Length: 140
Image 1 (spheres, rainbow, N blue to C red):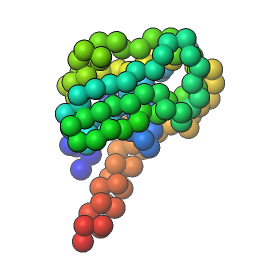
Image 2: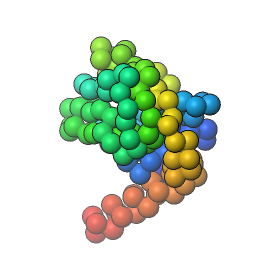
Image 3: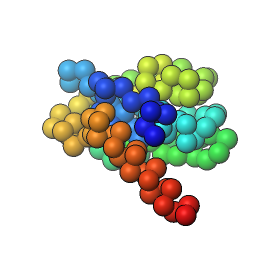
Image 4: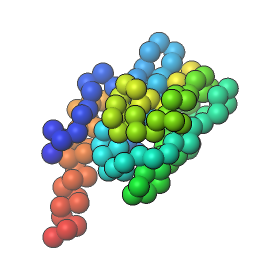
């Protein structure tokens, strides 16, 4: 199942399908391949404001697709230093390249220990398998 989704080994993940790339005291945040495939064609992205503090699990922004609208939650607490403004004109970058060109925000970490609460690639892969199993059971 999880072979259908790209899950880079060097990232951390949330149960809400956000990813974190940790670089020193910064974290880049975006949505996972699983999330973008479930949303399908993304047509609009609402980005957070820069120089604003955000807490882990708070809404960071919104992603709208032809199918639905979904909140993006911050996996970590800190100050939003930068947003990927390219997404405003090219929201499809979240579908085409969710882990590189499709990052949403760069956050200066206020509590690096929060990273320990996130899933590594293997844990996230198992989590997706559990979700798929639950979905299959519900369909029966």
